[in-house]
Structures are given as structure tokens and as C-alpha cells.
Length: 283
Image (cartoon, rainbow, N blue to C red):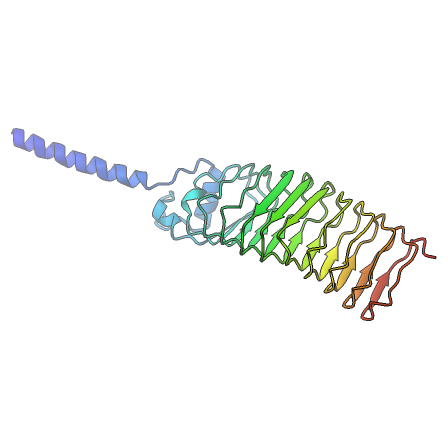
């Protein structure tokens, strides 16, 4: 009799441990909207209404649109993600530390007050506009090629350091951006900074620049001496008094209306096809 009881206890323990192991594999996702979005994206392969760790590891791409998501707790288990897009939600924070395989990240239109992507060494493209960040510091990401942070209405300062592959940076229509620093980030080709509060932009190291758009800022000058590859220049509605185009032989488009220019020498830019220079006190 004692032996039967012992065997029964052993069997019960095995069943309990097995069930406990199953439940331990379920990822805790407290935000119902996030969980439902994942289930809707067919991450729940076995159809049990839960997301197991094994299921998360199979996912390489997540694309979630508007859904009132406040938290993405549980996302840290999706360590094989290559593409992540969560846009038009209400995220205030996001921890991306474990997602080291990420190459493409889009967090446009959330409520993020801080964004740290510096652990994402494989990141190629970042889109993070229309959030609540006041600063954006990105450094030492050797593969990062594009950053779009347009319409970031609270953004005051951007620091881009040691980004050798960065070709495109866009922070347009933010209105408040007043500080932009490039530190050993010299290969930018496309730079969009329209409608901000910039009084100065350090361009001397950007020798590969092809397209520069800086309209509606507070600029009084533009140093373009080293931007010999510049093809398009848009700088209207600033306070620029002098515009030296002497090294811009590849320039095909120039828009500089509504400035304080008294002279404009175009003789060194024979490729110019379109010029908009009205509303300047040109002599």
C-alpha cells in the first residue's frame, strides 16, 4: 500500500512539473492590445491564445499599426527580430536591449520620451518621428544608413557620433531643434532640417553632401566650401546675408528666396537648372 502511494505521489509530481514547465514557457504580456496584435499577426502558431518563448524565437518581422498599445513588455523574448515596426500607438518607453539582430526599426507616432538604440549594432534604418524626445543621441552604430525623425515637435538637440555608414538624416518640421552635432559622421549625402530653430549648422566635414534642405530656420550663414558634390540646395526663409557658391560646380537646383542676400554669384555653378531667389535685397 505504501509503495502504491509513493508511486501515485511520483506521478502527481511529474504531472505538476510538466504543467509548470509548459506555463513557464508562456511570455507574460500585460498589455492586452499588444498581445492581441501579436496573435493577430499569427505569432500564436499553436492557437492556444498565448505566446510561448519558442513561438517568439521564430519571428523575424513584426509590423503593428495603430492599436492604443501602452506597453510592449514581452518584446524582449523576440530576440531573432530583424524588422520591427510599431507605429501610431501610445508607447512611452521601449527596451530594445535584447533585440541585437534588428536591422530596421520604425517607432513613428508614439509618446516616447527617450529612445536608446545604441545596443543595436546591426541597425541599418531608424524611423522615430512624432514622439516626445527632447534629445536624440546615437553613436557607434557602424551599419546605420538612414535616420528619419521628422515632426519631432519636442526635439531640441541631436548628437550623431561615429556613424560611418549614415547617408540620410532627416529631422524636418520639428520647429524646436536648435543643436545638431556631427562627430566623426562624415558620409551624409542627404540632410533635411527644414522648419527648425537652427542658427548654425557645422557642414565643413560633410564632403559627400548632395542634397541640403534647411529652409525656415534662423540661419545667418552657410559654410558650403567643402560641399563640392552638392546638387540641390534649399535654404529659403532664413536670414542669410551671404551665400558663397564658388565650389558648387554640380549644383542644379537653388532655392534661397526670402533671405537678406545683397549679392549672388552663380558663375561657378554652370549646371544650375532652376533658381528661386526672389524677395532678397539683391543689388
